[in-house]
Amino acid sequence: MANAIYVVFLLICLHRTSASDGGCGNLFKGKCICGMTTYGDREQYVVNCTNTDFKDTTVLENLPEATEVLIFTGNNIPELPWNVFGALTDLEHLRIVDMSNNRIKDIPGKAYHHVKNVQRLILNHNELSISPDADDDNHHHPRVFSNFINLMELHLTNAFADNTDAELANDLHNIFVNSNLTHLRKLHLEQNEIANFGDKRVFCDLPNLRDLHLGDNLLTEIDFNVLCLKNLRFLDLERNKIEFFKKRDLYVLDQVNAPGREETLVIDVSGNPFRCDCVVSEFYSWLFRTNVTVRNKELLKCHRVQKHGGETLLSLPVEKCRKVQTVVHDTSKMSTVTFMLIILIVILSGLVVALAYMSRDKLKLAFTPVIETVSKKVQYTTIRNNEQEV
Image (cartoon, rainbow, N blue to C red; front, side, top):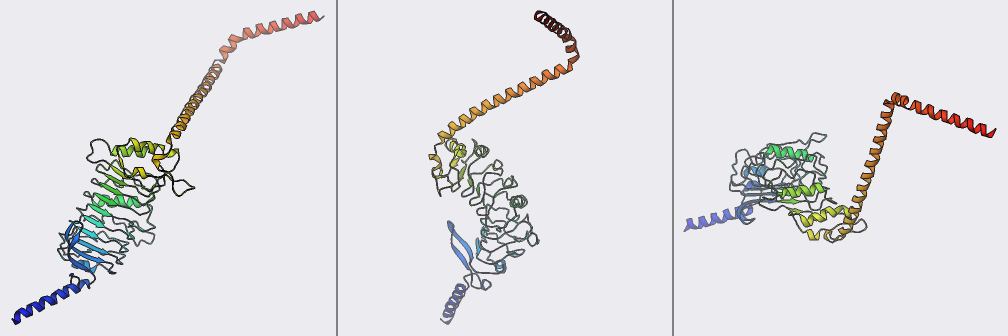
């Protein structure tokens, strides 16, 4: 009986100890919660260290081997060390790593090991700098994600420092190439103040990319290669600075959505400041004829300078634009013909002058008798007139 009471007492103590340390062990200082819980659509072993204000990642070297989801957010860790998860720990069940909002500025190339089975990496709301600064404190690590060999989702929303170098596109391309992210399907780059992509092939080394999220940036056009993304199914361009689409960009979108694709291309351009004049007429017409699915196209609005909002794009009187374009086209055609005629006349005149100059001796010889005859007639007429006056 005494033994049974002792066992029960021991179990109660163990339960209290486990509850007090969150089920993670003493090394986590009771700041985290570990155990089976519903995450996503199923029960998983989750280690949750949210808003724990850790100053380093030492605790991550002692993750339970059963860990499937790591949530390590709301800390203050400017630079990740080598081997964040330790040199010996084998985390073969780890599938999701969320290290958002940790003020991370630098990720060394050897930071992540034992992540071969991770499918989703979330680094949102950090202060990453992937280009060298003037003080050389931050360095470009093109192989930063190279150990994520099965990564399918990469979340980099608002992940870069506000003063990120203008060569962000080049640096991203180098990272994508050297990290060999051949399985990546979803890429989130929202809220990064991206105005353009200097490297047009920035995404071309992501052969299986299906969803590209570029919302809440400063893009004014599609200035990167889309045709190389053979599996692209969704392009998010919400709330950028697009005022109109060039004919070239619309043609490219149609090419991406060419017949034979398994899934129709879907784009979202909501919240862009489209103009309310004839410059959007090409986009207007395209909305009716394209096979690309434009999400919420009936809600797209143009914006006038004197107003905060405007009419929906589909309600614009583009017929007037077509008439104007026809008149302009006809006028342009007439101007072109007139210009060509003037050019021809000038050329012919020049040829005549040149020919006359080259044949001046022959012409002089041919016209001399005529000139002399005319001269004699003039003299004879003058003499007769003088005689009559006398």
